[in-house]
Length: 165
Image 1 (cartoon, rainbow, N blue to C red):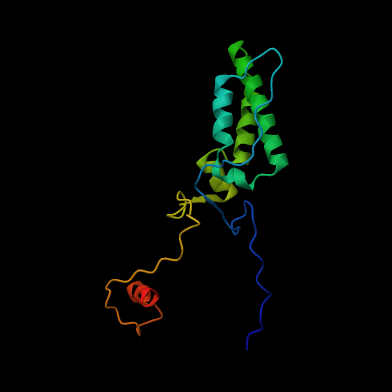
Image 2: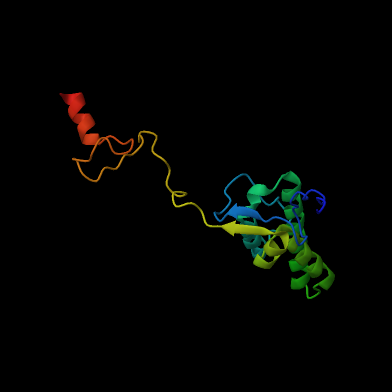
């Protein structure tokens, strides 16, 4: 007779091979997020502004907390500095590498989300429809002569006849 082995370990999160995936509904995030801060004497580079708008609406941003947003803002500042150096003809490749690493940590690309085990799932069919609070439960009866003894659904037409009689 075999002896029982150790109890199964709880599923992990993260980058390990047996980690669980985090599923996020594939709808743009429209919750609270910080704006890019004002810069003294400069305007934000258009590429950084476009990047920030894409980052702040990524669906998995709904999982972020304040430190995550701070990390993203710091990355935006690094990107701004990179583009300034690039325009001056002195791009720093070490900064480009750090920006890429930070974007991977934030899950900016499909490959980065795969490594983070974040999976976008299709939204439910009614995700775009706001429910009408005046609508009650809907009962569909194919025929008015439906047998009231079948199942627990009473035909709506027979209920109306009883109420108006």
